[in-house]
Image (cartoon, rainbow, N blue to C red; front, side, top):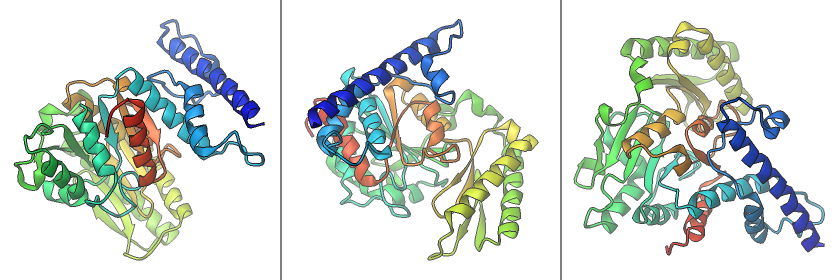
Length: 365
């Protein structure tokens, strides 16, 4: 029974593989042909690489025993992990994985925590750096000083320094703060092991319109929209305004409901989009789990800035790992425009994904 089920699942995965390959081919066709997948799923986005879904299903089936289950059909999480594995397989089989970028909260560490020396993802990230993969930490946290980023990522930064006495890993890791607004590079001799990167080394041409006046105009609209939501929905929060972001957050120990957070995000996004300020420069309004923030730019720009800093790495050679892909308001969602992505649900899954990268790439930890 399990063998028959596995064969049937693999046939389905092969059919979807062919749909993805056709979609990639039609996307490159200058005549504007519409793929079969686009007709079936009009909202489908870009695929930067083929996806070996049949092989990926066999790999995950060995871990999760999907085909051996009699009463529980393949779940959303089963399919999500199969897609992650397929993306990793496609990248590592052709030695195409040159850059991996990570979200912070819920991806590298639990929500509201920091990277600690004992966190298992640290040794995996260092292993990837040693085999030549560049690393980007693309976080919504928008600080202008290295000290605050070191506080969040100290476990990783200190571990790299302790294991790399010859400084071979120097400048192989960057921190992109505020989604896409502040870049620091790993420099073991610098204070807090991070050195700010000059804007000219990473800023994209599209960012030239992000002037001080335009940024402030957008944040003014966003702040007023947030204050209107606070009044209308009676939300017990404070407002925090930064140079490139504005948001609301509750007192420590207070939890806001998902419905209130999502209502605020959708309201604020609509009001900003309808304004002149929201049409001048891109922005990201998102639910951070227990707060709502509006940032200038988004993670697609953050990933592309990392690609530029490391010499122009292609989208098909970049993987972004994050937990927020559920809707257009989730702040990892936009990274799909800039590179391949992997959707994880916890730091434990990130560790499992990195183990897959090393294993499937034939590397020794």
